[in-house]
Length: 174
Image 1 (cartoon, rainbow, N blue to C red):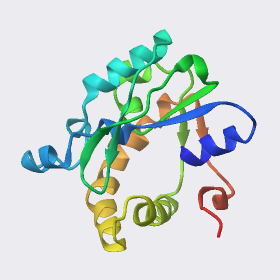
Image 2: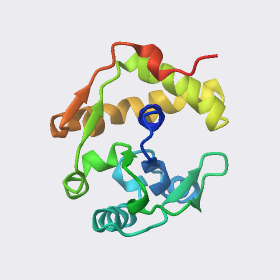
Image 3: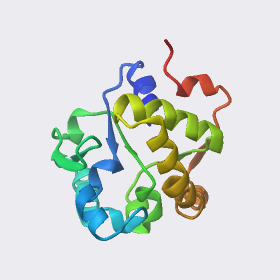
Image 4: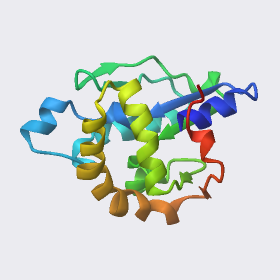
């Protein structure tokens, strides 16, 4: 979604990408309850509230998840009136019908599993300071098991299913 946002921004549109990661419960809360994945790891009530603000054109401040500390921090305000495109990335908006139904256009990016892993292998160490071992463990234990029922199962709900042919688009050059 970040790459898509950058590409749209190159066309002189005002774009903001919001991440479902910001709606994760703090890592300590998830560990205390032994939550690894699924909707129980999220603050869905806050996500729903923010999508309602968005649909009414009201400014709101989405949270941001700090992958280094495992804590949720305040993000920067979003004023829908100042943006041309708002991209909300993450499976929760597809998995919860009332959230999914609040979106104007739903795009499902269908990357092959190996490309998803390679994308994470590039992103997680550089943006989240995870080791390659941690990235592999997280992918195998939570992401891979969640991906089928929670994510791939949402593909029929998409207005557009995008299967990139040029996988180089998804990786930073350099």
